[in-house]
Length: 357
Image (tube, rainbow, N blue to C red; front, top):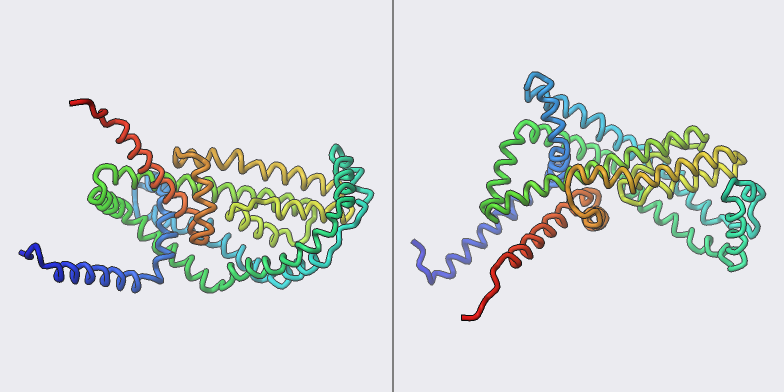
């Protein structure tokens, strides 16, 4: 039995445990990123895996194999194609940014602007007012930064070989998690209960719901927006529609939205003389942009009944703080903190007021 006053022994024991944990994390460092991604994917798609298992004669091995193939087809292949397309066209993107830097907005709008249905007159007046205010000189001052932004973006999605290895490792870890999902969930709940009592297990369930809500709301919405926008650009005859679709998917995942791709594509279509194609792309842009306000909240509510502002703040803040995986980590952190704070306030309100005597 350790004497109560043996402070040195207690201190060295804590330091040893801390050093052991740090060494374990250092050894597992190459696997931490893929493990986080695999956890997010497995938690988000666990109900689908259970449905597949029920249909495949309740064989877990068959369900795990089917989910692994689905992950390869739905996640790894599209993301890899998008990244390869962007990196393969990096020089073209930088050339477009350089062309934008050298472009000067004319003081008078082209004749086709006034011929646009419904919005032509307003656009012409707005163009003329901008010219009177001297705003046509603003674009050349801002566009030199486009090259830097483009180079940064290409740098972020560079290293295709490393990313492919990360994706494949994520799929392998996800397959293991699918096979042993119940045991892992039970272990996490035991740890949370040991740490925070009964409320800890509720926090684990809340984190799972937040992950599912973000995966459905952000991932599915971004995929639908990119597909609709890409089909619209292909129909309108926009060149490099595949590259622009990949860019649009990345922008939608990063919560920037599809308009930075669709609006310039519509303007180019008008400039090329295809008024019908330009109007069609504007309609597509309006429809695709409104999906953020219709489809995404509905999908998020299917996973977690949390304030949408909290989810959006977690997605954007997590993206800026932790990179792409922060899209899932950020909302989980905010959801857990919000729920614990709400429970703490409710516990305070439930306590009986102190009376005299």
